[in-house]
Image (cartoon, rainbow, N blue to C red):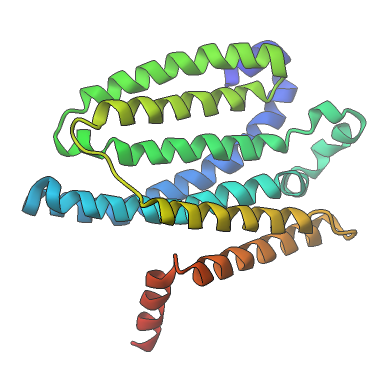
Length: 258
């Protein structure tokens, strides 16, 4: 992105782009690493003790947990992208108000979507890692890298500076699809459709509630704070009411009792 965006639009616009892109990439790196550190040791232990039959259910649970956190993170970041960018980089928005095409807050949501696929692919790669066939990971990554460069060049030329982030979505989504297709002959995680529907609908409602708060006739910081609190609250209620978060709630209650 650095070389492509700078090459097409210069250093100043890349600085705006990079600052916003780093919000999503930093948050999703934290999410992915945090969840994986809790999931992978259990999956590895299951693999050693019972092979695929023991490891796959644990991997399925890990992917569900990732979706439970990552999907609303995408929806929430997309909803609050503009006020969040204004809050973190207020000085840069002097030019944004006179040049609407520089509203780079949208990059936060696009980058979050790209990083979501990147994190999900890490779970798809687990079969390769457990079977010690990681050359396939290298091959898939190389293909995705080529797709990234080609798609970013085309999208930067046709859609503007956001093309860099959109190119990442295309590349990481392709990486995920290619990995899933190739790894199915070994084993691939599975999430029940009902779980997926509950999580996605709850996340969409979370994003809608958060976005509604960004339209309130109050100061930017108050809008942002309200969006975070209300969006998180709506998501929590939806997850609990739908029954998707029953196990997690019970686990928290058991810990509180102890």
